Length: 82
Image (cartoon, rainbow, N blue to C red):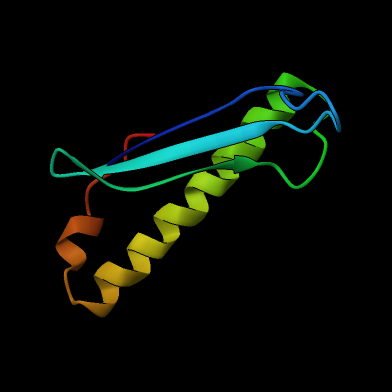
């Protein structure tokens, strides 16, 4: 499993909020993605990237609970590349 995330800083000129997005790749195909405006105003580009990272990790936690529910925990033994 791989995940990629990115954010811009103050991309919206009206309210200075940033946009972030991420995608999750499993067995070579994209299985989940999301892009949206961040809920809070980031004070720096690093802050915007950390918010994007947190949103991506939230998506990965959902997959972790899905694999546990499906009793496919062998997929959880490998590290996720982020």
